[in-house]
Image 1 (cartoon, rainbow, N blue to C red):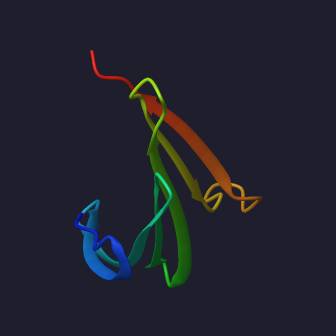
Image 2: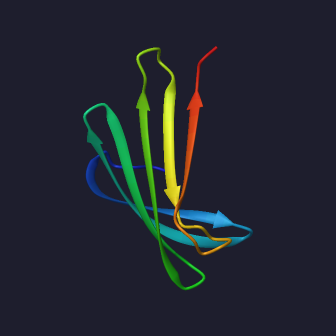
Length: 86
């Protein structure tokens, strides 16, 4: 996936189980955080996914993603991950 980092639209294609899904993303910097908002259509329904990436003071990459609850139809699901270079 390639993102333009100036807030303009980036179009990418995702392949899931042999099916292609077109997605449109807008990525922009807010201070030291890169925020990416992506819209795609899945099973005929529009889907919004958000992701933010930043480095903490120790150099650990922090990634937070929010997506719809595809299983239960409830509130959006947010996942937080951290990556540290060894």
